[in-house]
Image: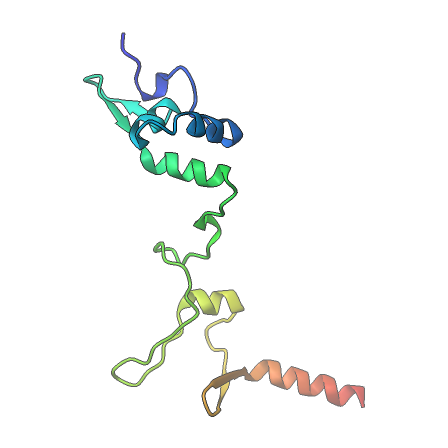
Length: 138
C-alpha cells in the first residue's frame, strides 16, 4: 500500500541537519533539495507535491532568521503599523488594536493638544490622578 502524507517514514529535517543537507545538495534544484530534505507529500496518484514554503521557513529558522510569527495581529492577519490617516470626512480614527494595547475602555476621555507637527492625546482621568498625587506630596 502507498504511503500518504501522514505515513511518511521520516520527519522533515530541521536545524543543523537541514543546513548540512542543503549544502550537500547544492548542485540540485530547489524542488529536488526540498524533496530530499523531506518537505513533500504524496498524493493519492503517487505524485510528490513539494512544500517549498515550509522548506524555506525551516531553512530561515535554522539560520536564525526571525520570522514574523511574533508580530502583533489585529485578528485579520495584519500587524499594527502605528500610523493613522485622516478620512475624507475629516475624522482621524485610531484602531481597536491600539486602544486595546493601551488598556483603554469605552468612555475614556482625552484632552487634545496640537503641536507644530504633532498631536498629543492626554487621558483626562490619568491627568487628574497625577495632579492629585502631586498635591498630596506637598
